[in-house]
Length: 249
Image 1 (tube, rainbow, N blue to C red):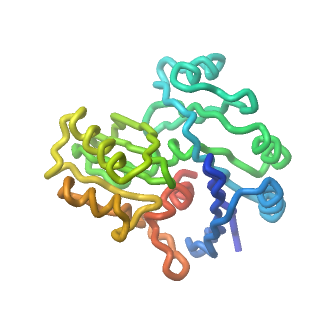
Image 2 (image 1 turned 180 degrees about the vertical axis):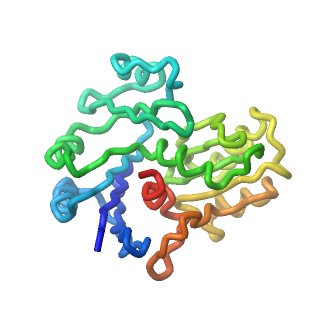
């Protein structure tokens, strides 16, 4: 049996992880807990292969044509205040022809570095950029919103080409709705036609969803495009960031 560990850590200290069995394309289990350094260390020790995904707000995208590895700090500094206790990493996202540049706390990086030969590090924005094109038709426009507690990622695609990838903080369902409608307005998208895909911490019983259906006509939850076998009552869209990493290997 070939098993691999996938871990998603948010900058709000929520840790979720799953064990993937590549032999039968199934998830053994998914667990969510509060983050502790010791827990992270124990998980890495237990598996020969792991992918670690960090969901943080400090990231930026730079076109491949102008990317220079020696300037990653300066790229990130243009749009963010960078904490002293972080390291700067970058990943090439070939499907979008960009480099994903992001910060990771040293305390976490130091733990990962102990097992660097068997752990790959990714940022959640890169996972979304790679996974989302599976939902799209060649010439269609679509909006994706991924919710992580009080933070939301908005990505807009035209065919397979990303037009926008931004993260926002929201304190109410009204703010949530504002960011979505403003995106539609700024990019001249039709709220009756352009589909909105939802993932993350949202369901039909949430106020955010109930408000959204009043303004956007074509709403869908992100589907299990990889046909991964999930345990029990697990809803794929609630763990898109984590489970889509399997597709992005």
